[in-house]
Length: 205
Image 1 (spheres, rainbow, N blue to C red):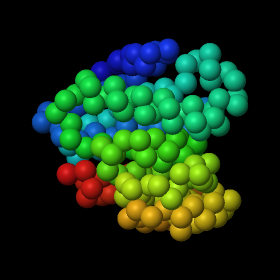
Image 2 (cartoon, helix red, strand yellow):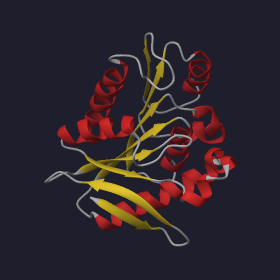
Image 3 (spheres, one colour):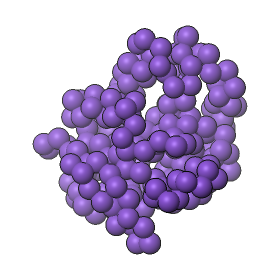
Image 4 (cartoon, rainbow, N blue to C red):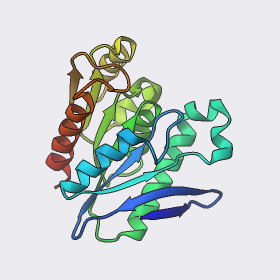
């Protein structure tokens, strides 16, 4: 269902899907230059819905904001938008009892930071994320966190390993052999999706 999130100063386009009797939902935080129509996140969202979880995909930036490249790396702004969208979703769907965040690239840093403000967020999955960009709040993370990185995404893998040791919550780091940053290799995104689905079902249900 196409929606528009009214977040006060801005309105952002999104896609909200809640399976019947869904008690949990996953909010997607897209990476740099990506949005609600990301084919990779759309695939992950479809599999999560098949597992009974609701999904919210939305643009973290307006089209005008996205034209300024620096906004894509403004983690404070992205986290503020994600936190506002989380509040909006909880207000719209009162039957939800728990939420998860699925973040990619810079969106993963926004997810980590926003989770500190929302105790309803009980699980986080990062796909090729940049948790290092949320360095000042890693020690405050309480939601169980799964970091998934491609084995050939060497710089990002190093940054994830460094961030991993600083997260006090229950956590895991999964490396997909042979995968690069966008997990475009055959079977790579499917592996990410299976890991994410298992993680969310474990902590959200």
